[in-house]
Length: 297
Length: 297
Image (tube, rainbow over all chains, first blue to last red; front, side, top):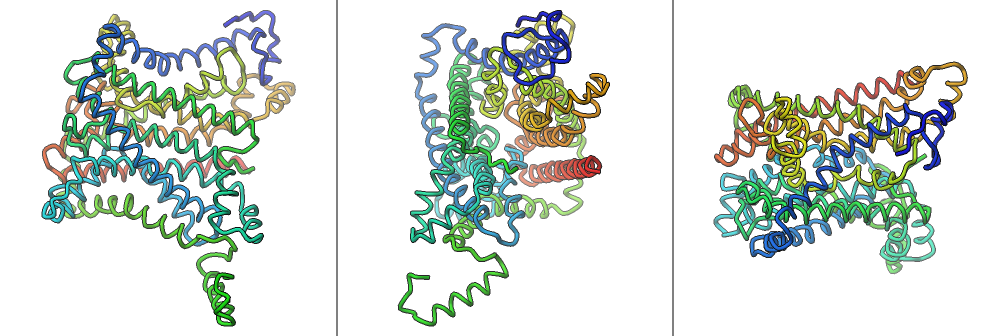
């Protein structure tokens, strides 16, 4: 950064959208440098370190660490889990946003609070509640065992725990957005003779598409990356109930650092793609003039 | 309603009576799908969140008051709660301070690469916690990129409570930045210029104009980062060292109790964590309400 304090007037320092080429006052430079150093230390370095560690022993070891049956099954399980959890929470998010944003009823704010509840619960506790329900000593434990159904330490438990931790993501994105948009367009569509489904597909959905996509991306990132909740219900059976984050943990604890960081680098890549798509969605929404987060003036 | 023309006059009565009924629970609307959407929302919410969470409280009730008190007042449990809350508090305070600077710089100044940096702020949301955990542990290990400089001064970061604070600072970073950013953008640069031209010094402008405006948002960000940090598991366990009484966090203690099939003990700690964080969030909400009321006078 070019910092040439003598040229800048202190009064002008506070003006927003300062031209990028203009020189800053030294005090402002110090401020910007502090912010950048903080972000570099806490965000930039970890991100770089993941890839450096993953490639520290060269390409061939990196590839062979990924090209391994346990790694493949972890990748597959992660995708299956997200492929079930995200659509489930998507349908719920739309239903919840439809009744909350388009209708007036009693107990609405309580319902909104309850939807946010999973955010206030530790991931470990999110897993624990399913152990209490479906575990051997749990409420349904005996019944499940008698009918030879395995939920815990198996894929269904992992999916349930993932649904729990990603539960509010799409709903809390859509509710304020649809509230801000009001219901006049839908009412016009209905009174002109369109059916409920037609109104939803042709009027509501085009209005909320960017917000919906935004919620889906964040929900997916969390679903694929969830560790605490899944760790409690998974049972850590290699090649069977290990998702990618759990596989990373096992490799790391075995001091197999290259392999651990190789799998971690895939997850970091996923995070980068998430951030990229998120920025694109924000940019697209701003360009088309549709508010993304339903800010109410 | 038009779908039942054969009903003739009785459907008028039906509509009239259903309208009459609906005014009690919800206001009348021409839009369809309320019952379906609300019914599905409540069913899904109950199955995924409410019933499992109630299992937590019912299970802890089976311990009885004395049994519960015994688990909670165990010195190892108390030590873990202390570590968890102090580290979360320290991380949230660090984030409030530095995130205000980051948010300020991102809102007020433009410099090359600003958009990328702005997008990168959300990295802790998108990066799986296990990846963050192993990366931070590697960076801050005594022979790591950053740890070696601390080691030169005899400071151990990884595998000590200091490492927990580092991990929790990483996790909480976006919460404060993203809550403060929009509020700061709303503070008109003109207001500051007016204050400055009326003879206020830079510190006065900050203290009297900017701080009161962003204070509620800072508190919200603090509360969100704090609440998230208390429950955090994945990013902490790798860097913490997990020594009982020193660097063992409560979520880890829950997991180790579960591994010993001590469901009741795990549940008791989980309930204690939930209750304490509810109390803290409630206190912060009350404080926020108080400051916003004072500010509006």
